[in-house]
Image 1: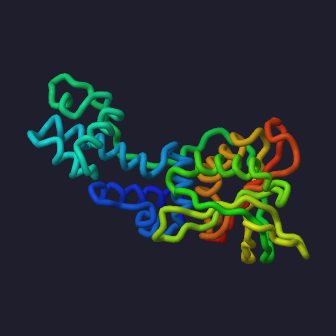
Image 2: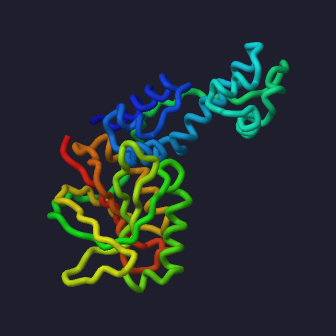
Image 3: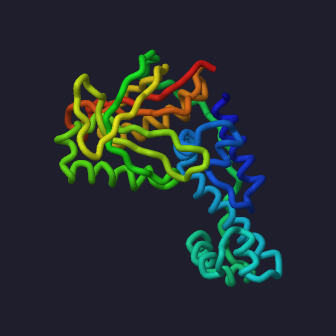
Length: 280
């Protein structure tokens, strides 16, 4: 799998079906990649989610139609996926800064959001510490929560971590790991988990469960810096620098963020990202 080509084929599919009710799972299935990695990689490289990209493209095209065609606003709203003229008007005004009716007037400024093309531009060399590691199957004991695939990473996961500490769960299971479970193709959610590696003879506290992690090859990336920026930046570098050149591709399995002891606000704080991979 060529990562850049895969993302561009996903964009091709979006553009070909822009007027249809398309889902993240449909796009991911079309390019034969997991929904989780498609969303994360797209967001890392484009700095917006797939749903935001689709919404921006639709509203941009809707603006063009309103300036060139004598059509009812409600017809344009329905064409671009809005059930009412009110919901369309709100979204249109947020994007363009004016109401749909005003877009018909001459000399009105509208925003054009052009089609996206993913390109990797190689710049000055920089060091990325990583290792390839073979690991036998192991178990983790975790507390899980359903997270929205497209919008939940930025809000629901941090809220889950706050809930974990507020409920005193860190006294039952140390929050060493943040684990993303794979999202099924027909779901809009994925399971996210907080927990630790399972130890021999360890009892599973109420409300926790054990996940079986299969034998796998892992690409392990070292992150140095304060949380959460350091690990966010590393995810972006993985998708923009490492995957386009690596002899490995991602697997539809768990991936991990591992947090060490120490001050998470320190510029010297160390964490890791574990990505399941296989050779191309």
